Image (cartoon, rainbow, N blue to C red):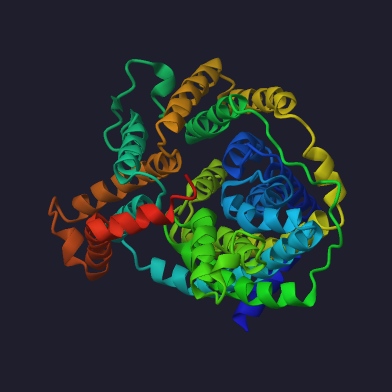
Length: 501
């Protein structure tokens, strides 16, 4: 009954004209950036962060959330129609979705992706509403030692589940932690690692790093690639799957929803890992695995459901523990801190309208996305014909304006450009930017809780293992490190992510 009352509060907040408008705006922007290849949710949310300064907290977060799960919907459109995933998590969608389109079933493929995404989004939002309150109650029992251990586990999980090289992921997290130490020490008030530059005394704004590493670097990477689209946008066909396609796609969508909901909660998991895991699962349990890659509906319905479910359950650790599980959630932490809202269990009690309004808006947003994706498919098809060389100047200008509006300081623009060049070099070296951003966001929080725990224990390092919950979290982190170091596990991990590379 209490959950019902909370949901009623959430819907009363989400159904206000202002919040409905921003939910719609977020869904449209999310679909748009998902449709357009080369523009993902991370750089877009990073670019739009300055806008949240002038928006009410609830409206700002509803819009940013809509962008995130809207991008999962939109990314499938380009993947199916022109074999170019507009969003990273849609890479798997190309394998069977585009083949269905080439077989004359483009409309059915788009419908399967949209309906699977809608189902997964609704189920995941229900799980978020059901499990977030009890988790938040547990989180109230956390002290500084437990929070430090939890963040350590989060960073280890991000390394284990990151695609690509393990040493590179570890190096990027460490670099993020080091960047998080730049600025004034909150305990002593002494400036550190600022090289005498006054603008660095308040630290490096994570939005600047995000826009440089994900926005500017993404533009440079896309500009050097030739546009080579296999265009079949003029023969969409019927938007209704036949009975056999529905029979094969529906169970896969259910399995993908369950798998994505679980993986989305894990640090470093999220939509990308979930879509790959779902595709692997469907192929392994199929009686006809040879059909995968040739237009199998299960190879489309499973991953599309998984990535949307993961996108929404990734809000659980953010809203209950204050721990971002991926780069987008790290940006959401920034959006909340802009409004002096500390992410974590206290959000539910101190800002119930924000917590439940955000959850209710996800149901509304999922419904909006079905309306946007199927009836307006003709509009998205036309957008696919816009060359990237025309899009990038507008993106660059928007990025620059967003950076300047953070502090009205040209130093921020130059800093972002520097991180853009560095991010471009990292992309060439196949170093992921997401672990860096997680390290940058979690670093100051880890340091604060580490020092607070030592202060309360009078410098006794055993406080981290004397407390049962803290010791358990550290033990799980150590177990993950040992497991992933095993040669057999490491080889299997590389095989899992080989398609993504």
